[in-house]
Length: 190
Image (cartoon, rainbow, N blue to C red; front, top):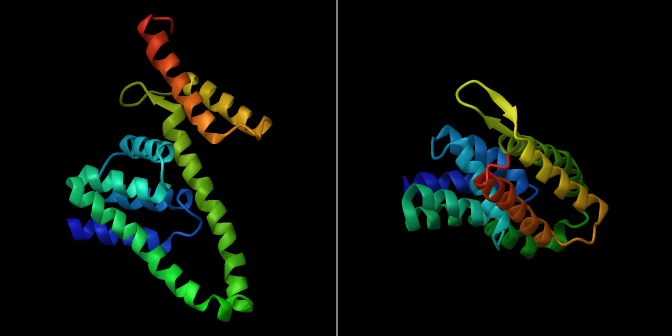
């Protein structure tokens, strides 16, 4: 199992271009297909990984590895996701001057841009579905209006006031969550 964690995250690290968000669809596919966690737990891991210091890829790999095999799993998954980038960056750094003006390398980079945007958009839609849709049992689905309000507030603030620091938005979201799902709910306000 430890080697399976390592090689799974090695593949994720090797074949994901565009950073942590672009790897969410691949993580989702591989982790859910192996039944390492359910979709709700994965979304929670994504939220915590984004909200904690460090890179998203390392955080999510560490959380999932830890969930499966404790510290050994966390180390295996983390080293797996980091190893491809480490090796590739070493090779690029050694040969950057040879390839910086290569037409094929430039063309490949232009070709990779749309897939990065597409993968980030797919991840966004997948996470939004889990974050904004509440389940009332086995078949009834409804929009979680409290999550929708928090989403709209944070989206509006991030777009209207571009100088607002992302840390403020994370703290604001957590505070609104405590208020909506904790304080108001405990008083039966809604």
